[in-house]
Image 1 (cartoon, rainbow, N blue to C red):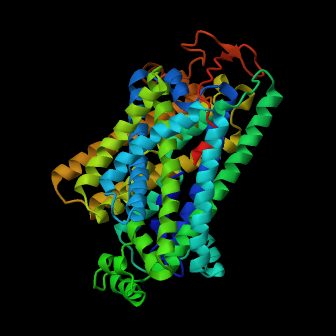
Image 2 (cartoon, helix red, strand yellow):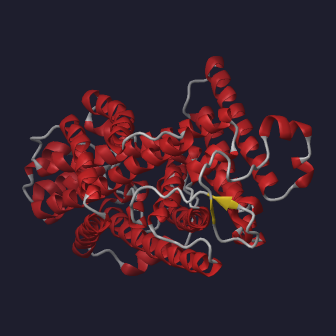
Image 3 (cartoon, rainbow, N blue to C red):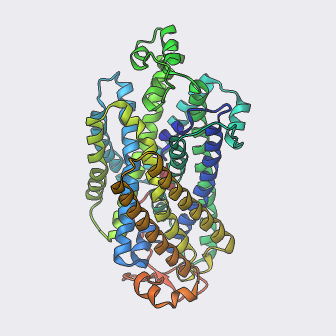
Length: 511
């Protein structure tokens, strides 16, 4: 998911520059955290039959629950803006500029209902469509990788060996590093992943069936993230190899040498370092390897954008359905969630130029990183609760690793905000005041979630505290608000929960 928008985070360098090597290490670490958190979110859905948003509705008080919903909607909007704009840029390239960017944005509204049409005719057809999109991504981006032919030794070294050679860096590098975390571990994906596993028929009365399902979903998550990693390697390596340390004039000369008119119109005659994006990356491929390479690139980002747009729409449906306990018809939920993301995206596409469209990706990725604790902390809390998970609750190692990774993300986010205020924003008291208020509220809400998580893990001293009991709340019975409970696999059969199976989506949809 989001494959088409992560390559530019490291295009400045693959062979020697510290930004890429450190960035690749962050990406590898993010993949590990993504795997850990996806495993936990899948376990929640498998064991309980409720997805993460539905469990939030049953475990949190009304105000924090609504705040959580808003935070996840912000993450979905940020992700969807990128996917939609990526799709629009692909259509812009494929149509030889005949379809404007704002027109491509409107087209994505229509194709969402095409996905609903496929879903109506069964799970297998939907899975087949996703498999087709993933295959298109692998073939197109793999083709670019083969044609570009970067050094395999340098690619491997750049991926796994962080290195710093004393070069200076600016706040943009920090923005990109934070953005990698948000791009790889999208917060709404945890809500989506916990819901998608419900499409499988699991006998929750038998612990052995639960264990088998958890194992198979873990294997599936490993395969999915591995394929995602390989496709990202293809894209990052191609552009890092071709554009590292290149100026606009360097790339323009390549276009002139191959008489590629579109490239000569795109790249200016100056010695400024090329600021690569989705659009310029495609033009560069056309200049270097011919028009076919540019069109193949456009087909690849079109496939990536379509698959990611659909999953963002599903995530919005599940979040709204779970947090608000709404039972709208599916087409109404689709229309509402698509409108939330499409309206700001259309306005940006209509009024902004191409450079601003592609350049906002780092900011949107960083926003998703800021929202990440609002997905990871509830996931850890619920999967660590004996009242909710019974014998399938997190062990001590899972608790330590997942909590440590969440603390790391929060720490990085705090440092990022401080650096942004100091280096990028005007030094005015109103700016400092506004950012201070935001930081305080952010930390207070993270502290609220952390305390609730600690209580879920069994911190009895906190659970007995009057302040915690009154203002934060303690984990309640998972049968809250459920009128038709069904026993599911537990060591203690007294615990019960609703199966509440809805939808029919394969977990391959996480792409």
